[in-house]
Length: 292
Image (cartoon, rainbow, N blue to C red):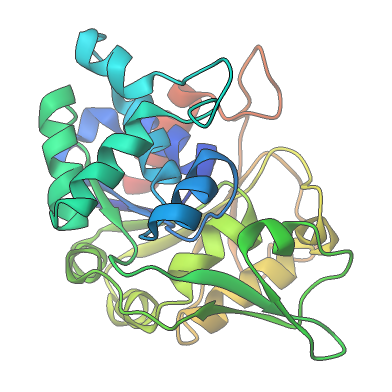
């Protein structure tokens, strides 16, 4: 099974869990990471330094570290106390420093991966700064992931501002994949941003050999995404992928009404300690089963 190429698309903690589950695949697993976050340490850095959002990439790398070391502790370190450094993660600052030294973002990630002995490929969805935006029902534009998450209504549509190109290596990885995983995670602010890039959506549509899999969240989201049912989320994904249908839904629920259109794989995916979080081993076994 390990020779299959798998691409996982998303951001935040959800993508990190999937990539951790795929760690046995080594270099045959690739994560394409959302780069539009503007909250927390990442948002503060972007506000004063510019650049892409590094937080989701750092989180994915953290979850892939198998051999704890001084280097990994340094990368994961978060400052506490008083002053401007409070709350900042050193990994975010390291990646920002490399960016300021005119190191290509993908090269900066690969440098950190080598230092921390992470085999899984991590590719930013784009190497150009962009923010997530949303259009409201009365045609107002909402800018920034944090503001989109706080909307009290479901947006008419999402967009990237400015429009930026997808990273070429991300497009190539999608074209070569045997399995393309969407989610789990925050639907509007983690899963959708990479799919808003035409290069990613068209690459998914053009790869006819791959199975496209939607990995369901274990609990309902807060915010506007919580107003979406499964059918609506699948329609948004498929529209972004130039009409390419999702092949499989990996879920722990009975999805009544969708079984006629989709291959719904129901299985226990929850961590024994936190029923809202995917268990790495269960997720790995479920994904391997999809490759058989």
